[in-house]
Length: 356
Image (cartoon, rainbow, N blue to C red):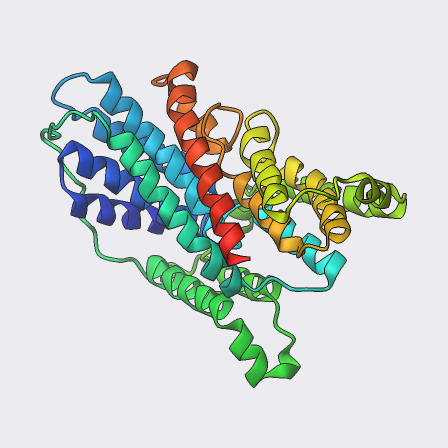
């Protein structure tokens, strides 16, 4: 509402310069950083007009440069989503399933400590893939909007955001200092949202009105709850035990990790990543018990891989948003995305093997 995200994105893009490879890097970094804290869908929707305005300043029409900058925006949104626990819904599905079935809470800082470096490594790899054969041209006559003074609303939203993010990252220490508070990531987020409703800007308007809140995609909560219900039903029916008993006992853990990485990265090209994670986490739990493996060794590659599908528009919302611009054909997206899918599979698999 207060366009703080747009101010942030423009400040990054201005610093990267006008050379083609710098523009690509700026778009990817800005989208990645925003997607750490916003939904990747909202980030892609916000960044698309900015990216298209940059493309209009190309000195000559170049399909490769135009396509790669747009793909860089979509890929940056996808990869930013895996960097934090709140970046994309599959991460939250995993955390809720882990808490409900194992009684083990996934802390915000624990997730970021392990997964954020993977996201950064994939972002660098994505940039290098898209930069190949990129023409070395500079954008012409780019007129960046002159930054206006910060409004009271922007300042207060920025402060609330900083406090909320800090509380998420330091919650283990806050709980140790104040054990009676019973802090959870959910309560921290709810408190931040409540402050947005209660505090007002200088015009005495709330920082977040109910009309704005109604625009949030609340339907995703139904999908989230449906996934949890499906998992509970599969456990209660005994189906998971049967699956675990029939799993391949002779496979080594590294092969099982690869299988679930492949399921996450490649199956998501055709299915909703949230639905896939909701349906496959119970299977990951059953297999991990049968094989005597830590649950996270199978659940992490599945969950992270489900946000790393880059070949088809239906794979992730950012892919669909970029495709809807009409400037990318499916064959072009598939060719570029195939290399990125292979890279994501290898990086996630090796990272989980050595980290978990």
